Image (cartoon, rainbow, N blue to C red; front, side, top):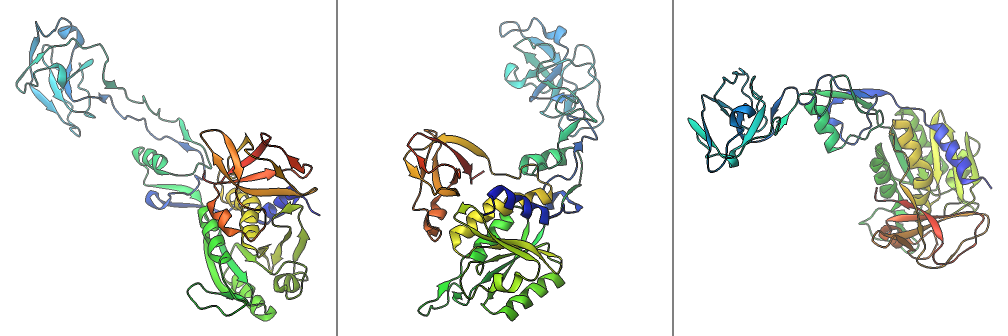
Length: 400
């Protein structure tokens, strides 16, 4: 059987890097930054006040106290946004608001709480410290400095920084366009009645959601029966519409009526068994130039296979710096067994308080309930069959 790592490499090789696109900043949330961001200007752009209060010369107010306040005239108000920048004359104070530009000549800010809050004249009751409560130009970001590396996922804080630097648009990695096909004549759309032997389709919606969560776009096709002509027509449509990837689920095992395997085995897709549980039957290749990855039909097998093979490949192709789920080694809260020669992925719950992990549900590939209840995967090596409680195991954090 093919190893997990080898199959990961084969799928990754199907997806070349996506092009770079420039978008308005408001449309880039969740996208990866295409190139390193170098600041075009300093932040702050000018010296400004960190407090509401009064701009003064520290030496002129050095002896102030509650018992003997220093009283100064206040000839100017400087709200945030004032642009004319009046200089501070000796022996005066300017009332200033947070974020307002520091007047020339001032070297300290007295908090309004340390004054009588006067408007025409102010009594200062606490001596300020030289330079206190002043934000210096470039204190946060120097002009020409690198502030975000390529591949950074643009979240709220990153978008706030880019906007503060005055950039209305930014270059990001383009999302992959993915078509998700669920195969099986037994599948019925949720909300429709079931005949005996039919099931409500779940893989398509689940995999399309996983594709979108990884940063790509997904179109779901409802549903493809076990008919080779219908299946090929769906694939021909994908090629004609220039999808970057087609993901199928079902029809890849060794039995009869395996429409995906029977149709694509002679058309550019290689089918194999991967030494893992769940998710052993897999396929990958190209149909008419379009990358195709075929996943097993059991829902847990499909979801685990997506996490192991497709999510990192999708994110790498789109330029994300973080392509893998965070992984930690933590002790097992229970004893487990694992099949010899296969890498097992068990669903689990990570106890973040105690730093241990427990498996959830049996290892079977149809127990979707336990997949939905899990916040992590336990990766158990191929060469281990018995794991006593307390054994350190590799855990994939599915919530990060």
